[in-house]
Length: 158
Image (tube, rainbow, N blue to C red):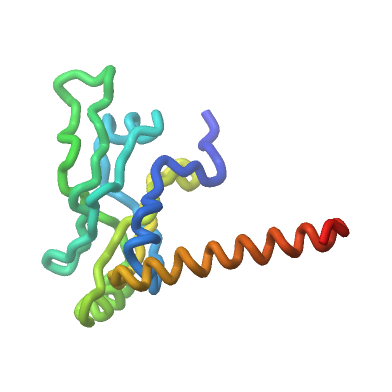
């Protein structure tokens, strides 16, 4: 059977981009059990309250919820277990150096399959204050108004 090609997004963390300013992104593989992969292929996963953490020179993903596989038996997995992330050693060292800076955290942005392998996109993030969030919303609304006006103008509906 041929391996699937391309990128199939399973879950994305849209709230992370609202709550954090993403400074850098990384792609990491995950150590999963068979029933976790089957549950992910069924499109079932949640990244709410998930975060990355370093322990003994390795990166782990805490709080990611992959529900139990419905047709699984006693081999089913724990839904919120800690999962090891697969990164290159130099990426881990670079990431750890940046994480030691003030206020930075490791946030999962999306979970997807890339050429048949389960991957997670991690963002090195800095928390936003309430006024930063309001400024982003105001800038987005202003951009919408500009695009709407330009669209009307190009159609001659001034």
